[in-house]
Length: 278
Ligand code: GLN
Image 1 (cartoon, rainbow, N blue to C red):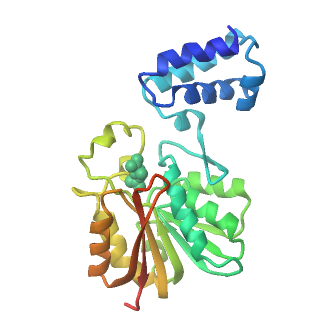
Image 2 (tube, rainbow, N blue to C red):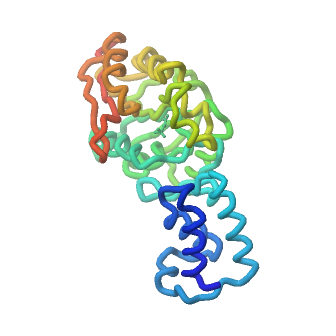
């Protein structure tokens, strides 16, 4: 079958399963033929051999059953880097690039800041920042050894020497240390959030946090002040309906200068706060 026919056929079978049926089909086909997406546009008439077609069909079946494309290909682009992902890690989201963007606005270019990414998952945030601030030292932690193994692989792939990875629960692996800025994309969905049906392939522990989704943010608000320098910054991603609650949690723990920033779709997504010497 010609490549363009393979794609049309896949799109029609995927369209009630995926909002991005064409893109999904193209990414999976490119993986099967080991070519960039531009090849599909340049050579629509190429014939797919049977072996490759079978390989593509197997991957397409996984997508039709609801597995995210990134787990099928094992990678995802974020902040112009290619990251390995696995079912032990969340798939990095475009909205999380706001965290990286805001952090880079705050971290001066030639500084040697100590930066902490709590709950790093695939390492996407920590590695993206470390690559843009080579004089800074970035520490990335995760409670899941399997996620941390993926983050470490991504770190090695990025060939950065200003990164370290530590295993443990929130601030536990860095108690006694002191950072200029702490960044986190913690789990923040309520345990009964309907979106979880769609996210069933991703690790629940990385997505949900108690009845209102805020349990881990409460822990960060309580514990992060102890490992920040005076006037250091905390930056947390949260749900679009949580800005008010997050601000109240931070205020109650003595944080100041609390500001919420919108993501590219104009939805409140990241709250930044300053530590005033707890
Ligand atoms: N942003 C993710 C989602 O809503 C949730 C990620 C998280 O809990 N940190 O799909």
